[in-house]
Structures are given as C-alpha cells and as structure tokens.
Length: 151
Image (cartoon, rainbow, N blue to C red; front, side, top):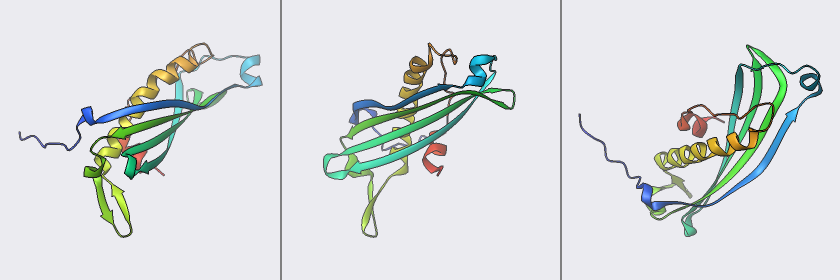
C-alpha cells in the first residue's frame, strides 16, 4: 500500500488563543419539576471561519447545540456552547489557491483545523457541563469534513 504524503505539518500549526464565546445551559421548568434520566444527546454543530492571509492566521468558531433526549423525545435540557480558536499557520501561503478575485483555502487544512477545534472542544464542553443535569457531555467522534461542508 502506498502512502500519500500530506502537505499538513502539525508542527507548523499553532493555537494562539481559545475563547469560550457562548455558554448557555438551560434546564427548563418541565425538567426541573420532573427530572428524567436521558439516554441520548442530540448534537448540532455550526462553524464560522475567517482568515488573515498577511498574518498567516485563521479564526475558527465552533457552535455546539446539545439537547438531552429520552429515546426519540427531546427533554427540556439543553446546552449551547460557542468556542473560538485562533490559529497561526507558518506555511499558510502553501494552502492558498487563487480563485477568480480571491484566494481559496485548501480543504485539507480546513478539515485539520476543524478536527483540532472539535477535539479541543470535547474537553471544554465536558468541563462546562460536568456540574449540571448533563453530568458532563462527551462529544462523540465526529467527521470534521461533515462540519466543513454542512451549511
């Protein structure tokens, strides 16, 4: 089996800053009056990307909406958490392709950044939801490409 060499060099990607930009855990009256053990969590993920080519920088915001479920029924317990990542990519120019009047960023780099963001978010979300009725949300393994292409 032949190996395909990736352009991505992890040692050239640096996280310069992480900010929790939104944290809202809602325990509704119905749930408080009659707490139910949940057996599943519905998770939605949104993203926002911005670039500063001259600074070799990328800002990634990931927005997570988690809703407690009992089988197929949504419970009145939810969490909305937004986390912002600032990356510096030493060889950022290698991942740019001229497209009409603007540069297009290579999808392999974008998927790598989203993957780093989701992995890091896993611990942040676990910690933010630990002392709530969620008892700590553990994000499942998620295909970062599905987050990139999902609009």
